[in-house]
Length: 283
Ligand code: PAF
Image 1 (tube, rainbow, N blue to C red):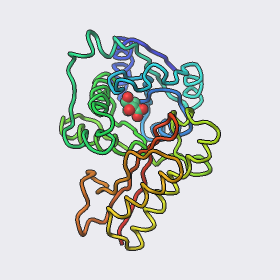
Image 2 (image 1 turned 60 degrees about the vertical axis):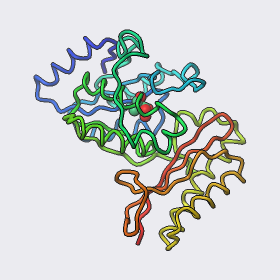
Image 3 (image 1 turned 120 degrees about the vertical axis):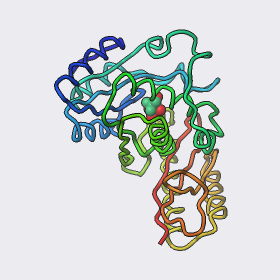
């Protein structure tokens, strides 16, 4: 497995792969890899001859006062895990490889509408940071297919739309969320939970499961279902940002007759902001 830090070295590897007619699958990450990330890498391994993974804690997607400085950086363990998972290449750029010059004035990719709803309301600029870095990484890696986790469902929908609207020649594949035994979605930020909070954290998944069950059993007054779920989370000790039932394809407000939905939630527990979502099929 190659570990490369410069865009020049990355482009040279990609050129070689292309000259050998290899298909490239790409998994962008911010490192601190867990079983959820490795599931994405295994998925990538199954669909392309070459697998590239990036590890880059992207400063543009962190707001003031967020955890950019303290975000866990575990490069040695990450590269060992990626070697085990049979990745071909890990790209570990420094910030100025991705953002030469000032971050403030640099070119950005904005996805209107999708970037400003749900998590975008609570983390202004976050999705512009994600869309910008993913576009830059796609331009460097030139993958045939890129793999993202469904845990970050809004991100997945946004990247799909961005790739389509910018005519990027890459297929976007989503992979189902990897969960702990009690249902908690795996996330690098779960490490911020105290042991007591870690036990409570699974209530987020159970609350979303109750929403799914209620809607699939005929509860079609979505605002009431959402309010009930918010209240249950608050009672359990969370500070919920939102619980929202949306159309799965574009995260629009569901209308009568929409059957393929998603319930999405974000909630603080101590110093960890947890997100999760579940598929809902209205009968
Ligand atoms: O999901 C993540 O880890 C990040 O948002 C991503 C896609 C790697 C962009 O920095």
